[in-house]
Image 1 (cartoon, helix red, strand yellow):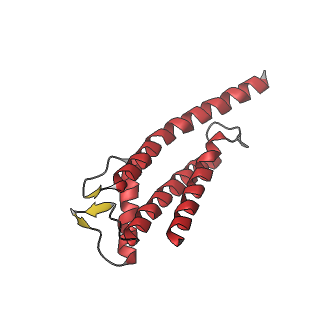
Image 2: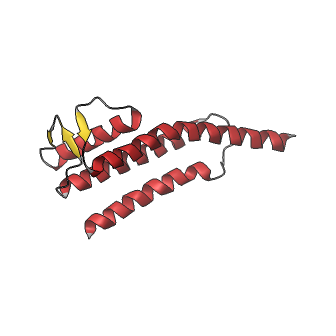
Image 3: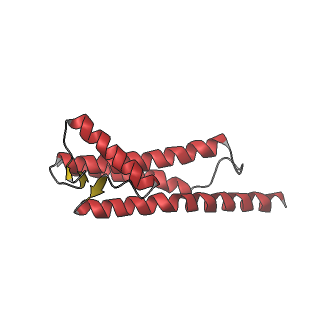
Length: 139
């Protein structure tokens, strides 16, 4: 039961973080430290959320990632490190190939990779919309 509650909480946190893309901006500058902090927070939330999903599955003895072709081994902290590394490689690139998803992990990694590739596009669209709204108000 705790597994499902944790999974729900993680997914809810990620959804709430992505939801900020659709809220009107308090700051109307095109590029600012606040915008950078917002984007960093969004990426960090998604990265940690997916890492925790991988880790929860691994702790529940459902293999979702293989490290060098073998089950993720080690204590909790080593498994957590591997999950975070895999999450970061999936989010920011196509990965190095040293850790690979299997089973349901393939679908989870696909969703994460899709989010990782669409966030920059959403960020640009959000910036353009905010800029156009600012220009309309100035006229």
